[in-house]
Length: 326
Ligand SMILES: Nc1nc2c(c(=O)[nH]1)N[C@H]1C(S)=C(S)[C@@H](COP(=O)(O)O)O[C@H]1N2
Ligand SMILES: [Mo]
Image (tube, rainbow, N blue to C red; front, side):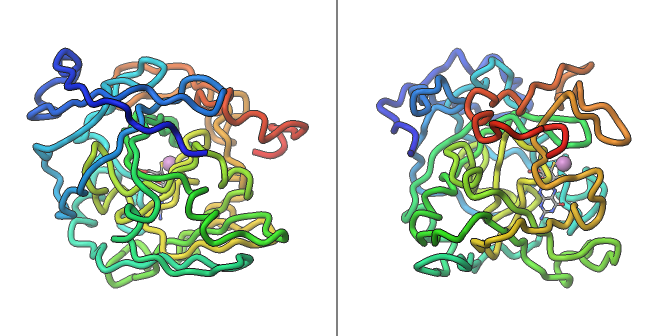
């Protein structure tokens, strides 16, 4: 179920001109062959196998070794700048101020780091994060990220399908859902002292959603290691769901029988349901979801069903009332 591998590497100079040099300098843009999903048409990403990972040194400066295969996603939407992706973040463990998260997260320790995978599996295992790339490979995926608040970005992630890791531990027949947990460390994460929320951050997926090839465990952005503010060292990315499903800084993954209760379901069940599929026809109780503000652009643009991934994922929800299961 993996995407096709890169067949050739071609330096594409003319692609550089579309991204302002003020945002990405110097521009190392590599073009790889477009990957195609198993028979369902073009996927966002050129599938890019990256070599040695960049150093994990956290920085809010624009690094000089950004690598990306293309300057747009498969819809032709321009990539969001590295500067915006790393300085406008939702990460309540550090701050509720999106522009302050990078500063609060700067010294967060992301190494050593282990991810324990267990529950209803045949082979429970604890993975050292530094081992993940060797075990499961690494590819680029350019995905749109749509926050439930009504803004969006286009982000070139580096990672591997969650399915690869799940296949390794072999879910038992009784496993129906995947439950994921962020690190709990209030000493490093001042927001975890906020009693309003039930820490640690928990998220979940139905097993078939978790096994879908679009569902990614990300360890990098723009060919570099993830920054702390983006969920280093490893975070989930589920591009057809609102951003809050894409849980950061994961330390536990459990296969379970019943639907996990997420931090957001506990905080406001009528506003943030378990499914959280991007749906322009289901308004949030306090605002419309029919349009969004793309960071770096002016004005608003229409929000697409399943964030533009309906062709790949709508079949997961056949027979479900998507207004009821929000
Ligand atoms: N642990 C944790 N994960 C989280 C969040 C959070 O507050 N804590 N915020 C979510 C929300 S609301 C969004 S929109 C995305 C933002 O990811 P980004 O900062 O990499 O763009 O992370 C999600 N994952
Ligand atoms: Mo979000």
